[in-house]
Each structure stands twice: as structure tokens, then as C-alpha cells.
Amino acid sequence: MQIGIPKEIKNNENRVGITPSGVMNLIHAGQRVVVEKGAGIAAGYPDQDYIDAGAKVATADDAWHSDLVMKVKEPLAEEYHYFHPGLILYTYLHLAANPDLTKALLENKVTAIGYETMTAPDGSLPALIPMSQVAGRMSIITGSQYLQKQYGGKGELIASVPGVARCNVVIVGGGTVGYNAAKIAVGMGAQVTILDVNPQTLTRIDNEFDEKVQTLFSNHHNLAKAIRDADLVIGAVLLPGAKAPKLISKKMVQSMEPGSVIIDIPIDQGGICETTTHATTFDDPVYVVEDVIHYAVANVPGAVPKTATDALTNITVKYASEIGKAGVKAAIQADSTISSGVNTINGQLVEKAVADSLDLPYKDLKASL
Image: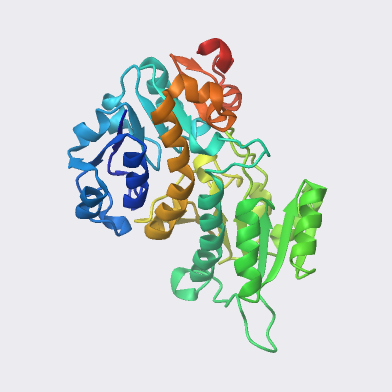
């Protein structure tokens, strides 16, 4: 099987679908790999590294004209013309907030496997975890920057100093993103509150942080009070495959002090804040609503492409190798983690959360093979 690695064209998306060492693994497993010229340079991997690993470096057309295409972010509209029946697309898709891409995949009968819905037997999301770890940690670093006065913030230091109140960081969602955000915020000396609807999650966080984090059950009353008092809010709620729930209302945002900051991590799924109306890019990452800074970049890990690409490849290359060896149908039937990632196949939408979010017909995967 030929596996293609095109260059990412999303604004300031500096990651690449695979590292040279990942290419070497695929080559040793008997696959052919074509990498678009310059695809890995921004992540620290020049073309020669891929050539040395056994890949062919060629054009975007050559990379896309493959049996399986590995990417990082969802294809943009200008890439839809590469779609064709039989293509296997293996990347982050986030289709619940993207009806146009969903339509293009269905019309061209692409087998689209989304990293974000791949679920391991233990219920974890293996391909989502590494990027969620990066995004969670980056959210606090980014938030601390925008709290600075020259960026329009309140002029507060997250770590503070002795004798001065610590910055109040509120994290909505205690999953991988939220946990990693809390880890950095606590390490920087902030006052940290995490809200979640799962009591077991709150118990785990309380135990792991040795009561250095305030945990609250996420209901309207607790959320409204926490948001009102927050200097920095991290949106960290994800429903795999579905649109993010709008948990933070405009009224809650209006209650925050001017210059406060909201980092809405799941913006590629629509975001959890009513006032994060659209995704942004690294070129123009923030907008101000109700005197509160909203950071809504949809590819936060793209800011640290070397770390992010390495972490992602550690997970994704294993499943790419399985698909390459067995073929996509056999791999889907043999590995439940791969099958759970299938969003579209044979012109059918087989991810129920996406179908429900977009109000489109759903068909069971087994019946679509």
C-alpha cells in the first residue's frame, strides 16, 4: 500500500502527519511512503530526513494520489478535489462542526478515519490524548501571555508574588486537556478550580493534586460563580465526534472583569462558550467580547510542531501499519480501535455523533462494509 503525507496547508499549521522515524517503521512493514516536498520542515524535519528513512519526496499530487493519506488537520476546501472513491483518509476530522467536509467525503466515497473518535477497549482516546496533553499545557502558557497588559489583559501574573493574591484559573472539564492545564497552572502557582460532571473524575483530580485544586461539580450555579471570579478560563470539554456543549453563557462572560481571558480549546467542535463565535488562527488569535479576551485558535498544538508531531506519530503509526498490512476492511474488522475511528465509508456516515450533530442519515458501520 502507498501511504501519502501531504503538507498541511491550514493557517500556521506547522505539524506534519508523520516523523521520519515513523516513515521508517512503515517502510520496514512493507509499505511505500510518499512525502510532499517541504512537508516536515516547519516541524524540524527536512526532506533529506524522509529520504534517508526510505520515503519518496514528491509533489502534493503524488502524496495525495495514494491508497492511504495521513494528515494532522482536516482537509480544507481547496484539497477536496483530491478525494476519490477508495481513498483512505487518516487524520483529525472534527466533522460535527464541518458539514461541507462531511458532504465531500460522502460524495467521493472516502473512507475517513478520525483520530478524535478512535476509542481503545479501555474507553480511552489514544490518538486524541497526546494532542490534548499539549493543548492543555499550552492553554495556561498562552493564557498567562494574554493576561499581560500589553496584550489587553488585566495585567496579572499567574504565579503572583508573596503578599499578592494568586491568579484564579477556572478549568471547565477534567479530562486530558483539563488535567494537563491544571498541572501547569498549579506548577505556576495559580489558584485552580476544575469543574466536571463526573464525580469519579473530580475524586481522581482531588487525590492526584493532593487538594491543591478546588474541585466542583459542574452545574449552572457552580459554573456561573466560578466564571464570575475567574481571571483565566480554560474550556476543556469534549464529546467525541459531537459538537461541544455551550456551557458558558453570554451572561456568565458579562460577569467577568474586563481584561479576563477565555481559552476555548474545543473550538474546532464549536467551542463551549456562547461568545466564542468563530475559530481563529495564529495570525489573528483573539477577539474581545464583553471586554473579555477570547482565544479561539483551532490548532493549538501547531505552535509546538516538533513536540506535537513526535507525540502524535508515537500513536498513529501503529494503526497505519495495521491498515497497510491487512487492508482497510480487514483492519476495521480486526481492530476495534480502528473501527471506532471510521466516520465515513462507501458513501455512508457511520459515526452517530456526527450524524446527530449535522442532522444527517446514519448507518451502522457493519452494515456499510
